Image (tube, rainbow, N blue to C red):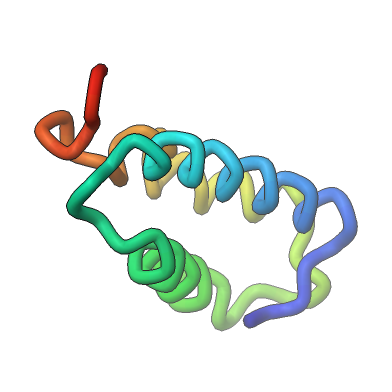
Length: 80
């Protein structure tokens, strides 16, 4: 993974925490697989970015990835 600034690392951790929160209710999705997909997207987006990557640069990547909720399809959510 690319090197992130401290504030970018916190932003990524928060995003992943939200994803895990949604995945907790899913019976059909593999949390590790979803997190791996997210990491791969971020890695591709940031491969040419100067390191350590700033929070603003990471935030723009996360915005393009979409809401943490979008990683879990509605039918995979247990009670939502």
